[in-house]
Image 1 (tube, rainbow, N blue to C red):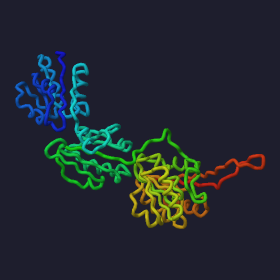
Image 2 (image 1 turned 180 degrees about the vertical axis):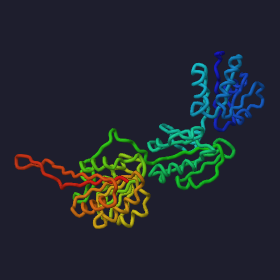
Image 3 (image 1 turned 45 degrees about the vertical axis):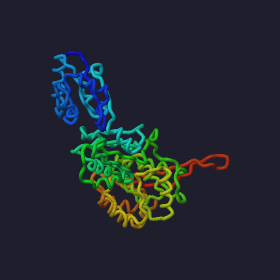
Image 4 (image 1 turned 90 degrees about the vertical axis):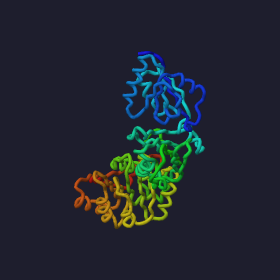
Length: 407
């Protein structure tokens, strides 16, 4: 095979003007490959034209034949040919030493410039030609650009995001159409508004602005000290019990969790921190405790935690079906709530019930014995060191019984 280099020419978004260096390369080539739209920009080219379609193996075969025949080849591509572009394919096939890339201004750069958004640390996802590309990384970036297509429109992807990410309704989105062309249009709004749009003018892409990008802590933390939480006179699940409770819940990466009788919200908050794609609903009827939950939510910046003030019997019927339920309270309504929660729980879901009083223990025991096919019961008692005169002794907390029910 002739070792003449393949020249890949990136066409700027507007495609209104080609700089002289690129034009010279194009017209000195014997073969010009590109999509029909780009080939039409050069009606005076009198060499061999190869129209790029979806048949990339066929294109590579044609290029090899022309290279073997000693013909010089230029390939037209959009914007930056290395940004999910044909340059990556040709470099993989022919080797980096046999390919030269002359980039242009990409649609991604144009969109960010139009919107005045910084381009450092931007996440770019290709849903134009890679329809199964995961979108979960957008949770960790303040700005993301998703390349869209006729098969996966911006509203299709937005609906997926709204379903997948708990706090995404607060995000701002921009649908950018025909960038650099006569019919350029940018539609901006929150994601719910944009999801209602039905028709688009291609080509288009989607820009997302996430005001609360999530950063994982250096290590997952189970059982944060009580002092880190606002709580009402000790109404909090203590760290050791909390850690074991969370282990019993076996949290999914995403889904829905109810925290009923949330108290300080410590269990729900730690669950939300450990699984940032999980939607956690904290239900608490005591107003003072609810105010503490709101303080804790703000302190830990858990955007995937939602607070619900009122009786669980009135609130839970309107909530999304849960994958996990934690009962830290419930009072006289506990048995009825356990029955309702178990019926609402999705298949393979888990329900964890912590009880301290004999009355709540009896409600949970009767429920498990009569309605739960599979459950586990453990009882924990933590003893803590206390000063006793010039000595020290261990003083026991109240025992906590933990029921784990699987559906």
